[in-house]
Image 1 (tube, rainbow, N blue to C red):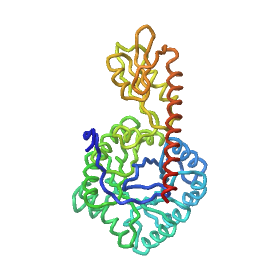
Image 2 (cartoon, rainbow, N blue to C red):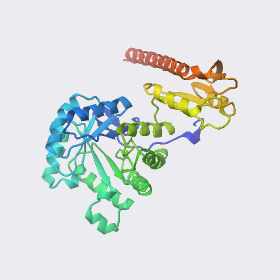
Image 3 (cartoon, rainbow, N blue to C red):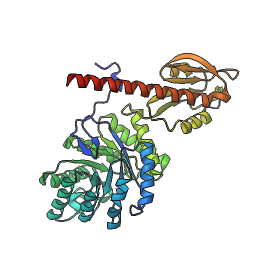
Image 4 (cartoon, helix red, strand yellow):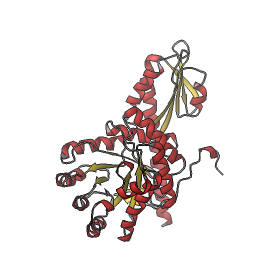
Length: 381
């Protein structure tokens, strides 16, 4: 029995595939991905953007390959980056073959869109020969004409049928190394489609609310849709689609997963919205701390509360806490216990030092635990 069953998320049982060296589905962590918006044929610009996404924590990155110049640039792009690269292919089967041969870890492709059975077989062979997985990507804005005629409009049933039709083509070619997405810009449509698909198959699912909007509105919209699905156990990899710097997609993706306790990376800051009771400028302090702590990858929690109403209670639940006090005298908590006081002018530098020290301590403990496990495994073997 779980100690806190209200926090439990029972993930859907999906089969597991690999995108390069990253596992997707099964009991693997839910992965976070984004997509470049540079010209893929401009290898230098694309590499720079992928490296920025790597730094932000991207598990994989998708690049569009609309022409031969783009797939020709893939070899250099893949050589100069660390994360698995997904090649986005729409209609031209040769681009899929070229991308697989260039080293792409995955092809985003709808097999029903690339023509004859021979062409599909050629792409599948290239994928198998180059250890390349695939993603079937159904979008409400580009459903097949016959499905629109059958259902009258984009609807969950049409999207699920489209996904399963494409999946059947790959299955008929004895290819099962793929994941599926059924995206729409409408939250209700997306969620219902994914729920239907989750019941209809066991393939890993790539979640997203497509064309969600700008940084603020798109993050809110994606958080609602993805949050509903993830909370119900659906989803193996996610992309938050924003009309913004792709790095912001990675940040938003991790925040969604962190909020649900599904994955942790970096510092989780619990902070109050501030009010007349605040004993220091909470909003400005949090802004500075977010900027100064962006380099920390170790999961830990930090509470920044402006007064003593909720501050002590929040601090009890975090690794490091700060609660506003009178006369420029604020309390610092370590591991939930009162420890010492700090003045406003020294707060940010002091908290950064504490967080960096705590992260180093946790990393050392993790390294020690891993070394012990390795030694035990060696002895057993």
